[in-house]
Image (cartoon, rainbow, N blue to C red; front, top):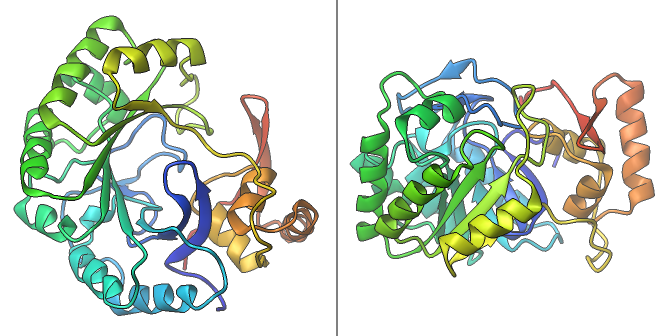
Amino acid sequence: MGSLRYIFGPVLSRRLGRSLGVDVIPRKTCTLDCVYCELGLTDKRALRRMEYVPASDVIGEVRAALSRPDRIDMITFSGSGEPTLNSSLGTMIRSIKGFTRIPIAVLTNGTLLSFPEVRKDLMEADVVLPSLDAATVENFEKVNRPHPKLQLGRILEGMRIFRREYSGQIWLEILLIRGINDGDEEISLLKQIIDEINPDKVQLNTVVRPPAVEGILPVRRADLEKICSFLGPKCEIIGFAEHDESLPPGQADTDRVLALLSRRAMTLAEISSSLAAPLNIVQQLLDKLGSQEMIHTFEFEGKHYFGTTRTPA
């Protein structure tokens, strides 16, 4: 396919299976500047919706990707920024559904669900995965560092309205940081909000990849399990799948590796699983990219990661 501008993967996801990522926002253009973001600091906080990338080009890349022999379980709008900032999101979802039966998911921080046009754009998605990391304004400011015009109360009301209007699946993700938003009072308030929104699933997460801000720590597994139990039967702890030897052989080249790493840092096993490619082949590609100084390596929480500062073209 040549250089990949708008798609990446498929990425092996515990939540979504083998997910083909669709990236429709310039890198780090977002409504938030979350301290835990694996993409680094947000230098372009935005609220204005516009067609940041050509919808026809995105649709063309997805169509071409579906012609490959890769197994794809889900087409997921996610990637370098907040996808609902793209004013053509609904057009792209509808167009893609016109030539495939593969379900479509949208990963969103949920901050624009108070906008009627955003809710309308999401109506034909099969799964919407909004995030909610704080029940209080204090922690919202501390964890998510929002655009100055965003108000937590309006965001929460947008989620409630969306639940009433939308007939698809809503999987609400909550990311907890040790010592910040994992206290008993915050969790109790979050449970009240969750009960009001009534998502189909609650997915509990913590810091599992290198965060934007140093000193941001993951919540311990035992504590996550207690919180998960408190939040009720809809709640599950999510994480990143390890290398899966059962996957059919896939194809890997430097363009596809760079398309992955330009969105997020990954371990060797994660890259291998995402591309369904043998570890030794992926290592050879990483060695080649390293010799060209296109990637770098670093450690986080005892794991060895590969990353790149290259942004998608």
